[in-house]
Amino acid sequence: MKSPEVMPAAVEAPRAPWLERWLPLLREAGRAGPVLEIGCGGGEDTERLAAAGLELVAFDVSAAAAAIAASRAPAARVLCRDARQPFPLDGRQAGAVVASLSLHYFPWDETLDIVSRIRQCLAPGGKLLCRLNATDDHHYGASGHPEIGPDYYLVDGAPKRFFNERAVRGLFADGWRMLSLEHHVTGKYGLPKALWEAALAREA
Image 1 (cartoon, one colour):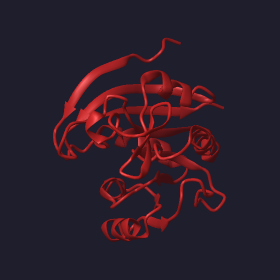
Image 2: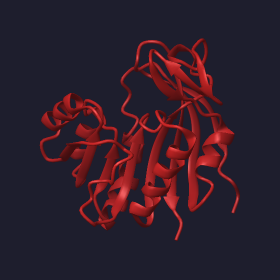
Image 3: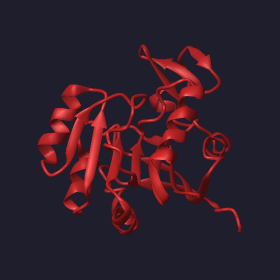
């Protein structure tokens, strides 16, 4: 099978609904189980996912953020939890996982472990939508900060990882089929922010 092409960088309008084009894929995947959102923050994506009629389980490490997300998406099940803890699926398999800018805080071995557990929690053929900081995300920490590992910096006191294309593909090298990989620049956060957006399917 031909490898998916990396699309050229696109500039996304402020507060653009990035999830909209993926909703058909998520609705189809959601037939196999709930959608799990990792690192829901204040619930902007949570609200969109719940409004699309998806069965949604979401969590964030911040109790305050999780409370806000729960208020924005009352139909969703929202919890306070660390991504390194067991996923709150109560023994079920997820049909899809959404992880937008939530997998960049950890040492590489922990990041690999989280991605492995995401794969394990998915039903066969389940989908993962993932956004990752890009190495050219210079406005948000990709340069000018103490380096604690390759492309891993201490940004305002917190660890933050940045990915090039090789690192993204390496992260999903085992047990995944890459459906799409694109580099984007979004203006949502004020200054231009560079990121990778990936859609993947769990291989059997």
